[in-house]
Image (cartoon, rainbow, N blue to C red):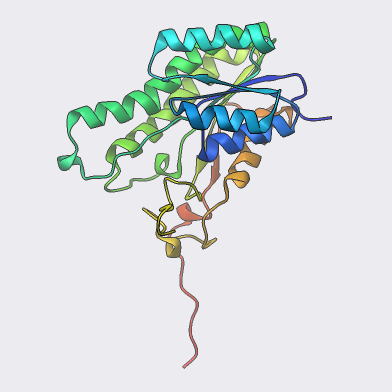
Length: 255
């Protein structure tokens, strides 16, 4: 028996990276999974690999009408939604003074407004299902300042606030809302596919001095969404390899 047998799950940003890993993880636990993304070719490929219990639906998370269509089509295909994973996210590298307003708004629209629209669209379906879980994928950047990633950092802090408000508003409907805060994960956003170079990450700043594998973050998301975490809502779950611990002393070397 899987933890999500017969449950319906919607995951945004599911065409690759963490989102694709989450989709595979939920399917392995018995869920019917709707993968969404703007990357259609990759999304359809992942859904096909998973099999009959997965479908891909194109979705721009900033489009409220598109959200309504996805929820309607999901209910038609699999029934009411029990889990929403707001995973879609983008980043733009550059200092605040070098960031143009259009880029700033794009990052905020995808990372924050996209999650808001997802919660707004899926909440009625979660009530139909008799309750469920929303997992907002924030970041370790939602716990600290990251120079050069001002827009991204701002949105990941904002997701913490959105999570807490949604948790309070939906609690009496049996819907739990939590955020997960990954550190550096081995995906195309952190590792150059051409050179294998690690981007934006100082491994020496980590107590666990390596990148996380997507499956490690997926295991945490599955726990948060499951009944195993039934008494947790509005909470922050951190998987950062110890990045927030502070200074990591280097091992002393012998003379």
